[in-house]
Length: 537
Image (cartoon, rainbow, N blue to C red; front, side, top):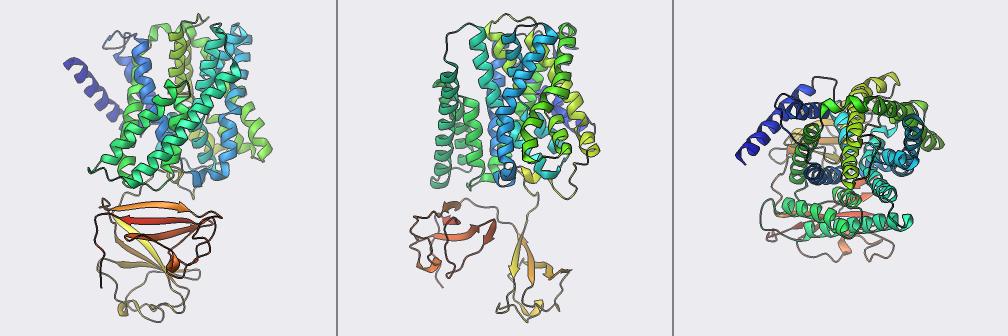
């Protein structure tokens, strides 16, 4: 026991140090984690014998569910909305097309049967969210035409489809008498229903219940993620689809203490990725890899230059995508941990295979990370797809500016109390500083003698508010039947301690006053203050 704990601690420290080294290298850090696992393995320096596929499947599946949840939790739907349709097609039809093409290639190039070939294709059909996110973030790749959002959404959502196809093909190759349509419908419907219900319920509970402890909401969400995977899995549904959908629903809603949740799950998924890639490196026997290197190389080259590009071309070209975008999306089809985990499912099923599938998929993932992951920045630059004016981190919901300052804007109208006054004549609250003034097309650094005019836009800085224990934000969407539709704020029947903080309308944000009219499709953001007394003047 103590030896295992010592090993775990040493490995995590080594992974962290290697992550810092990887930041200075063109290689994806996940590739180094695999290499570290191989160094500890039976053919490595430490000669640790480990071939427990069942234990590896349990550990990797649990780790993968948190990676998939965080992929959904970090997906910014507002940013991804323009590419949502294309991403959905890539993650569904694209996976099926890739699996079929790879299956045909395996049949022709490797001489395996059609069913076995499609099983191999199903295992490696999906792109890997952890690998894609790792490259996009670590290399700060901001791509034109919302391509980074497209890759994020596709890679985060296509693993459940690959998982379903793998389970389906295992059943068919095993000779089980099943209804293909029935199995797929059961997987999708139960998984989607559980993800939707658990996601909605979690948002409601997180906004309505005071857990009475500082990190209570984070602990609750941790438990909800586990339930989100286990419940549909027990019922015969797709647990990975459930947790991904659950993550999207929760991540794109206002919930208290979200910053703390982001930090927690960011650390958790980092550890999960380290564990998965190290464990897979430990599980493999490097001396056996030469036996499958040539078949793995053939399939990898086929996917890179034929299978993936054909699928991407067939889906994106009808949308008018440029050849440059098609090229980058094709190259960014990195394979990773999900494919290896799915190959373990096949090994545990006992299906006789022509080649050792785990070893072959392992080599494919190594080649994909080493070649595609390393060269993705160079390919993006060569195809002139780098967007120098964008920040890829804005694609992710978990992006946080690391500072303690908040910036607010004040629009000066002709009848504003500040109009016609100099800044030194205005009594600003202590700790608030005017840092910028926009006047027409001109940007000014104001001082005390700067006079304000109608049409000016002031940018003020103030210390950020961090203690939110008694402050809860939640939102309400105004539909055509809502009783507040077309009414001014001062006529709304609101409970004590509740305040409309902002109104989201057609992509803009309004700070309301008593005369603001509530319109259909408005999204009202409320503040509920707990355990606070009403202030009286």
